[in-house]
Amino acid sequence: MRMDMKQIIMVAALATVGVAGAVEWRNLDQEHQLGGRKASEGYLRGKVVLVDRWGLRCPPCRAMLPQVEALWQSFKTKPFVVLGGHCKGWGEAEDVKKFVAQQKLTYPIYEDAGLATGEPEFDAIPFLYVVDETGKVVYTGHSERMAREAIVNSLTDMEAPRNLAQWRRFLDFELAHLPGRAYLRANEFRKKFPAEAKEYYEKFKALTAIPDVKKLAELVAFSRTAKDSPAFGPKDKVKKDKFARLIKSAISKYASLKESADPRVAQEAKNALADLIWAEAAL
Image (cartoon, rainbow, N blue to C red; front, top):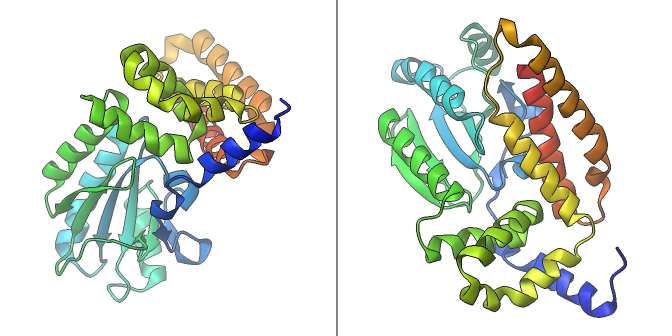
């Protein structure tokens, strides 16, 4: 798609909205990884994130880890990530890695991982906190049950906002950071709030002017479906194979989006493709 100068200016303006308030994560590199899947700041953006700050030499922390793994297994098909942040000084890295492997913990675990700015203060571990899609901390404490409630509420609000204020909050965040998801939500917003949608005319116009945004929205929608697909049993081999082929085809079809000149498009495409690869591996 070729853009004129006015469209280019609008897209550039949209790209800068909200960047200063973006959530930043720390220590998500190979040097600090202790086990589980890899994570990245880019991948966590737009997800509901449960952070578990724990230590190997802390018996209550070790006792809670199976519950944290269960939370990850319960919601991993959603826009959700568990991030284990082992507290430095509470165990040697190699011992932690061995323990994580023995316990078969599959979520990302890093040394001192957590919010780079604005992490809630704590004086006892295990300490849990939940961050919603927009980077707002919505729970802090030591209760797995209350953390689960916060996760459920955050995912529900993200997928089905309860009021106009919530719709605006999520839409504004996605317009700034997640153009594919914003494209999908904007279409819903226009249908649900036609009068209020007029206020977003210029932003929606700038959104549709982003090259490949519609293609990105297709990828985001498909990856969401693939992650949330039902488990296939032994008798479902034909359906399973067909679905696997669909995923492989989508990965190939949308791979070029990772090279987009727009960093938001490239990052969201990488995230969605990573979800498709994980969904394929789980078949």
